[in-house]
Length: 82
Image (cartoon, rainbow, N blue to C red):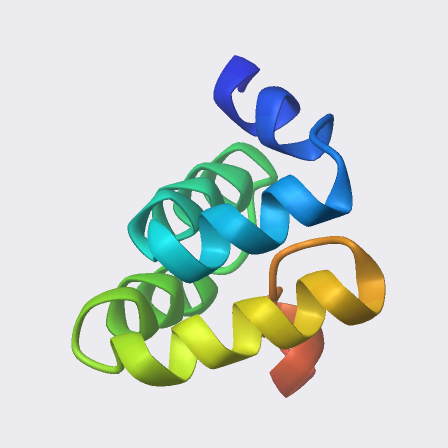
């Protein structure tokens, strides 16, 4: 969780740069966030699916969400999964 707290504490410009150049770091961030937050297993599977096979979509969504909300995309909110 210290990893997630570190990324959350960064300024927005640093989050955007990390998302652009090292997008896999945010995939790891999302998986940790959802496992620790006891989200639905489907959400963790979506994190892994979008982070690997659909990496380009995940990359674009992360950049947009960081610019808009200052946080990485949350697929449970995006798709309305409880």
